[in-house]
Image 1 (tube, rainbow, N blue to C red):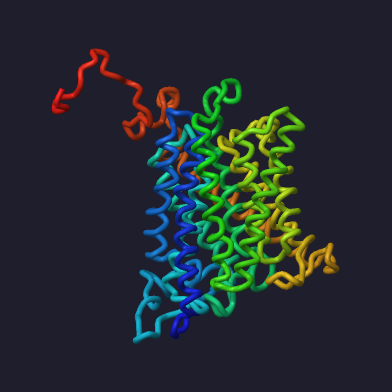
Image 2: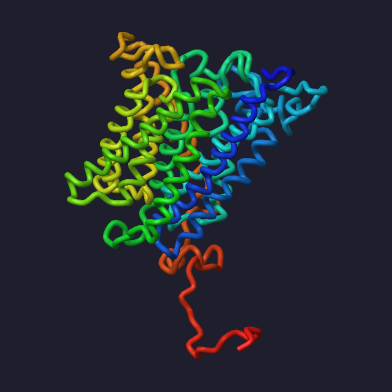
Length: 437
């Protein structure tokens, strides 16, 4: 529960920066995904990502924060009314304000809202080129309320920090998920797989080539995601301290090594290391280190990055084998690397790291490994089941799939009456009036 006190200046300053970095990740994802789709769908994809910001924020202020971090109810969710409208979180008494840890509660509200926003936006990558925009907006709101907010409570609402007892994964199961390997990555990846199956394949996939239309967008988006990820992971300490420093180093190392691992696999298997592979490799490593960044040493982080890069480079090809159209590889990268990073805590966790637990390779046996596995399975099962109910309900009522002709012509024009690129010129060579010539 929050308490009233004087915030620590250094911790508050750091979390304000971290919250801004996390918010940056959603526009960065819009660039990353926008470059991956065809030119006739780029605006729609970026809109799907960016609209996650207002949808989540409105729900977050109304009751979402309270549902995620309010007083615990049976370890499953917070009291949705306790902090409704963010009451009890901003009333100042001189220099004393409501705190979460050592920082103002409102900064924590801002910080955690960014997690919810990017999680929703991640799902958009699996439904690219074929989902109705209006249906997407409704889906995003329902999914936040029914899936993300409860799971965030399970994983992030720690006893003594934001709730008296906390969610069941963090306080009862005692699995480690420092910054969202289950709540963000596995959760969004599982939902992405379900929605891809409900929507069906893009028209022409996999027969027709559907190559990324703007690889510089993809690389710029990946770079900005990497930048934002330091706030995502190190900010989750809520302190400007040595733990934040180690977590920053682990975040850098996992992303770097994963890029090398992915490019190496591309070179060995296909003959060429690609820019698309470099961007995907970075993201795979960052996903994998998200749950484990507080539990491993810098060498452990590099090992996790290497494994994530190799495994995800193979996993993105599973969609061709099993026939599901995960348009932008949300399943192959976020879902798979999230599982890798969460489970490898049970193998590589070191007592010298801030989490203070031992994995199998450090003499801890399988105790932490089974806890991690239960957390993975629980989040996977809940997310898939509830997402399927939401998706099927929308399919049977308002419809989820765009019209066939709209998909062929381009979702940008059909949904937004816009085109990302204007290739038309004045063939007569005349200049517009008012140019002085």
